[in-house]
Length: 331
Image 1 (tube, rainbow, N blue to C red):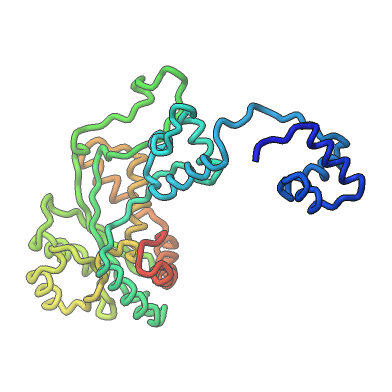
Image 2 (image 1 turned 120 degrees about the horizontal axis):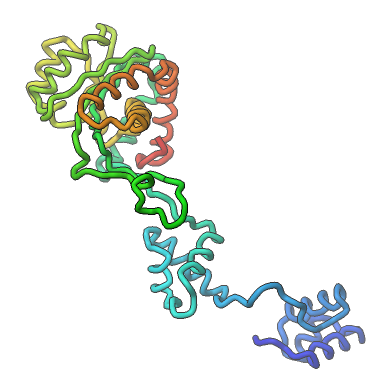
């Protein structure tokens, strides 16, 4: 229903003062119950039936259009504000910044999307089954596990960085991040950690195949492995090859054989790599030798308490996977 004029408003107040009920006035004047009630409340509070002064300009967007903007964005969260406005057919009336403001008001802020491994239905099923089984294990048993993994470092990693700079100085060399094709020089390292904070780091060959991986294990694993240990590795092809498994069996290494694929959120050494990459990045190594020296120094400088806390988090990680029904978690 459209706006009602002041003469009709005055008539409503007159009838109300004469003792008519809201329902009687609605029936007689063919008005909504809320219209009559709200007008009377307004008159009681302000002693006036006229429109009150409003702050700011009237909105160009109706309440229905605002709901449509939010609904389209929630349906496809990767749409930009311009794309949302185009889908709503309102770009000719509203600016992109206005659409963006409506989205923010509804709690839909633009964030950097988290990058997580793809999980198939089979992966999800295996993760739930594995976490459910190992959650029943004595938490103290995790202290016998040795977590291992490989990671790649680059001298010029392809990452975004924030910079504070004056206006009109975007392309000044002082404020840019210089890049090199394919990230410049790169090296791969293998590491392993134990519950007491001890660790080992080995530089991998340029091409890590089964033969190279066995050489890495020969160089590093037995610095931390004991007969009471359980060795944990993921399902990379060189980890599961016949030659690798034969070598581990020959060395009488007790290995966790049922590690669920696509599960870096359970492997606590992934957190060590995140910490290490941040530390190495700050040193800005320019060559492979500088990069390796920085990696080695920063790796062994990580406090033992960090590793101890990561081991304590394992039951929480398994519980988080179960609560997420096998899908990705915050870890």
